[in-house]
Image 1 (cartoon, helix red, strand yellow):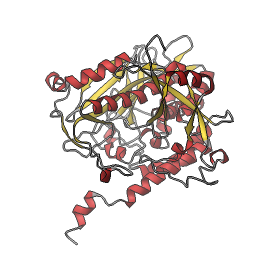
Image 2 (tube, helix red, strand yellow):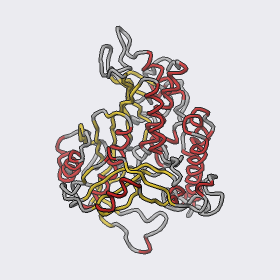
Image 3 (cartoon, rainbow, N blue to C red):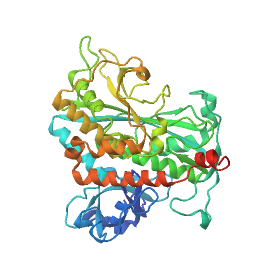
Length: 451
C-alpha cells in the first residue's frame, strides 16, 4: 500500500437498502484493522432510506435480537479480494467488509452474508452462479443541490436538475456523444477499478444511459453492482451532475429504468449448465431453474423491486413485465431466454429488477428460487409468445402488495432465516406506511380546489 502511495482507505459495507456506508481510515490504522477489524455502529441497521430509525433505538425491541439491545458496536471485517484504488482521488484505497458481532457471530441482517450463504449452498450442489449486469440510470445536470438548512431533513429536498440531452432517440450515436464528456469520465473510472465493463449505451429517456458488464461469478457480480452505483453518483456530483438509479423519476418524458439480470449456472468443469442440446433451447437444469424463478417471483418482488417507486415501471407494452411468464428472445416477459439452440452461451435474463435493488438480495433471491426449482424439478410451463396478453399470474402491483408474499414465503424463511425475513418485512412495511401517510401532488391537484 505504501508503494502505491496510499494515504487513506475507505472501508465500506452495503447496508440493508444496498447503499454503501463506510469510514475513511489512515493507512497505518487500516493495516491494524486488517488484523482485528473495525468497529461500526449497528444503529445503521435500523435505518430506513431517510436514515430515520424504524424501531425504538434502545431496549429489547431492537429487531427482537438481544445482541442488538443498546445498539452496540459491531465489527467490520474487510474482504481483501475487494480492494481497489479509487482513480479519481489522490492516494485513496477502498475495500468492502462483512458485518460481525463482537462475539464473532455473523450479523444476520448483513445482506452480503445472505448472498455468500446462497453461493455456498449452490457450490455444495455442484454449481457456480454466473451473472451479467445490465443497469439503466439517468444523468441530469445539477442546477440547485438544495443545501440550505431548511432543505436538510428526513429525507432532504431533492435537487433541482435539468436535462443533459433530449430523449427518445434510442442508441443514436449523436445523442450519446452529447453527454460524452461525463460518460468518458465514468467509463474510464469504472475500467480503472478493474470492473469488467462491456458497453455504454444511450437509452430511451433524456439523459438515460445503460452500463453493461461481462459475466462475473458469485458475489463479485453484486460487489461490482454496488460499487458501480456509488462510483457513478460520486463522480457525477463532483462534475456538476446528478445521477439517479430511481426507477421512474418525476421528470418530464421519463422512461423507466430497469436492472436486467443475466444469469446461468456453471459446472465445476466450467461448462454452461443451461445450454440445451439437439433441438432443446434449455437443458433440464436451465428449465427447472427458470421454473423456480417463476414460482417464487411474487415472494421475491420485495428483493427485486424494493421501493414504492419501482412498481410504477410495471406497465403493459413497456419493456418491463407485468405478469409471471417466460418467453424466448422476448423483452416483454419476466424471464427472457437469451440464446439459441446449440448456443453454448444460452442463459436467462430476468427483467423484473429495478436499479435501486440491493444487489446482494437481488442475486440471492435468484439463487434461492432457482435452487428450489432444481430440487423440485419445477417446469416453467409453455412459452408466452405474447407476454402482455398471456393468461399468467400478475406481479404485485405495489410494494404494499408485495410484502405479504415475501413475509409468507416458506422458501425464503428457510433460505434466509426467519429473523432476516421479519426484519426486512418490517422495514418495508414502515416504508409503505410513510408513503401512504404522505399527501401526494396528485391528491393536492385532484381535490384541493374542487372540494
